[in-house]
Length: 298
Image (cartoon, rainbow, N blue to C red):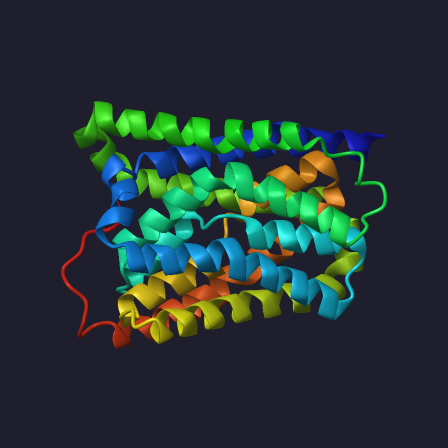
């Protein structure tokens, strides 16, 4: 069927290629020092990663249960919650005068760890929600390999390009950010168009659940960071990391299994910039007294 063929092309070809572009641009903003920062400032990184690896996925499980989502949509919501932070979290953290270095470090580490965390939570969600038709479809070793190929390989390639010619890469940074944002918009638009009929059927169920997940994740992570005596700039970075997941990764992995799984991530992507942007705007002024001169993520 023509529609099915178009969906297959989007899921199996366009999404992985687009994600590879985004991850390459992310890699070009990273240095080995970003990974070493976990040893220099372990408390902030540890609290941020606990939120990413535990709080967000568990909240997704809880919200999916509370809303009584059908199995495929519930699994998709958990897959989104288990996805790492995205490059846009780094940019909004900078605009909010948050701790950009912490944001970049969390994005880098969670993107590498996604090779293990995303397949693990995906398998757990499939079993927990008894997703009929999905139990035998995803070969987890294949999912691990897929996540590795569309995240770690392009991320490493981007880092290699930066190490090889840092001046040229630094000069290209503004353009690369626009490219990453443009690719992100195209990916989300493509996912929405390819699944338009199914999305409109599920929107009233998925949208409130996705919005609640977004607001809860950002609020709880900000509160946890403050309760752990991190400063407001660090709490801002952690909250935005939880609010701006790498939904492109969630869509790519989901669509390779069952396109219905991609619906929560596509819906989430449609409004996450509104909530995160409003939060960043509010924190821009609050963080001003503590902010130090800091360049954009590079």
